[in-house]
Length: 505
Image (cartoon, rainbow, N blue to C red; front, top):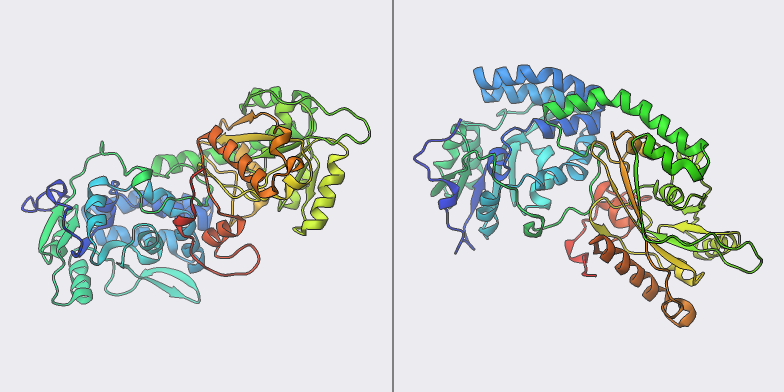
């Protein structure tokens, strides 16, 4: 399925002096290393349609392969689109395309194609057989594409019909026709493709280069990406190729039973043995550093405030397991189900600064307390901005660096039902948490010595980030929800996040 050898390979294309050149590139197998788009359709199916939609797509996959290789690429992709999109809300597809797919796409970016594509300062155009609604957010938002010409899906009353609009799937001659319509008589300088059906549009460009299949080529590293993926959503950790998708479907009923067992152990057993119960049930808990002893029970003595980095809503529970005693936690927003099954006391913050300060002060009078000042979780190696309120209330501050590992499911969500977060985390075959206790903040670095609350909060953020080799940012909870859900958690709006908000620690 490789294009004619009359086109040189992409490594022969110079990326110097291309500031005014226009580039036109295919997507699968060209801009991306992978030539199959099935994993990305599977992500849409699972994240927007659920496990049964993913199962249906998996059952249809053999038919797609037969049509693709023995009938036509057009027929195979049409069936793939129908099986994935039929009856699905367009808004759900757009949501997954914006919040889930970019993370997986950027992890598969082809280094040579990206070298050429990114060097062109003229128009950057992508021609793809994939539905435009599925790829446009990534291509324009993360790769800087100016134009995306893809397959247009048919809709009815806000739902996809599973059919495609004329001229049909954008392959072969349809790609060439779309390019002519977009550029007229102007010939783009560079055309990039990877298979014989790309030849028609490549011949319309002044220079054409093929991207030969190479399973050993490594994806573009994070430092060379134009925009890092800091926020992303979705439940699946791995890209669901057919084998991974099948294993995921088969594991879900087993994993759910195991999750219920693990949650019951954490909720019903004494906290002094939860650490060992988790290990017996396959949950790995690693404790580093020296945790402080329980506070003395005497009047006028304030408890310790544990300042935790925020990975999942289970952070305070694993903190308690590491300490062998239940540590209450103040929370910003958790589901009623999560509160019900929580083995520790949780107290909701009102987001009224005076009221929250008074409540935290009262809680500290009765013992230790845990707080995650980021206000929301972040999956990537970044720390969000720390709210400074906690620093004003006590000088008994112990930073705690939390990090976790999941192999199948993410235990956080911005778009879905948060009540399932603990279940998804514990559904992983062998989830792991690492709890690192850092040194208690010395008095001279607290507000009691004249430091401002912002200085204290920023210092603790930097200390935790240095311990985890993470990067500090000024992003907040509102920024996360704007990026993933199109709102700030309360009012629907869709501003775009700028990568320039990242700052060094």
